[in-house]
Image 1 (tube, rainbow, N blue to C red):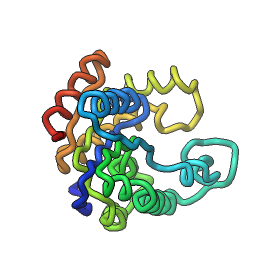
Image 2 (cartoon, one colour; image 1 turned 180 degrees about the vertical axis):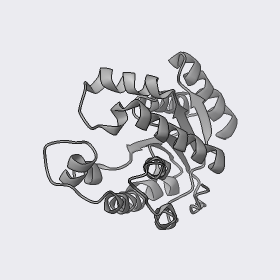
Image 3 (tube, rainbow, N blue to C red; image 1 turned 120 degrees about the horizontal axis):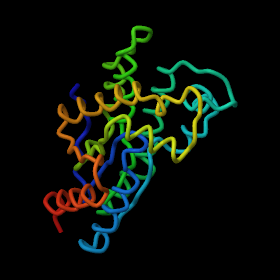
Image 4 (spheres, rainbow, N blue to C red; image 1 turned 90 degrees about the vertical axis):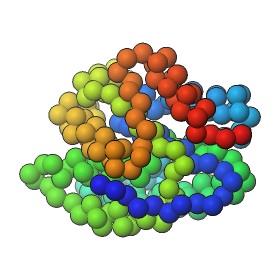
Length: 220
């Protein structure tokens, strides 16, 4: 699925990292930040999507993270809420930083949300209007560089379990669901020019790939 977003004309750069929990996003972002600041002398603003506004909502925590708080909410409604959250963060944080000429490093972006719903649509029980969600997302800024941190589903789930322990019902702790979402991420990457960095092997190798990519794509 091709996602139509809005180009920006500011002097800064928007660089987004996508991928499931356990894919190595945090490590990749640390590597990118260190390279951009220390090697290229750029000012970096780092943040995460969705923001705490979305993450801390008890309906989100109950429905998606299976926590014993709040109450169930329709998942499409939570997707609309996630788009609103991203638009709000764009106005308050991303656009001001880009106007200043800063580099914005974002942990997750709209592709992460869309990959989840694409995977949900592979279930016989659920169907979501991806065109509707993609259209709502159109005002979001097109990243200058988008990177997908990719790993096999067994690797992703093993890393999440080591970090969080077992939580019944968590979609990121189910190998089949992780595989469906990872496949959706790859489909979005191929359709939208997102760079894929494998993290199956050593982190040193994936970090080197990120540095090479930024060396090629980011101008002083």
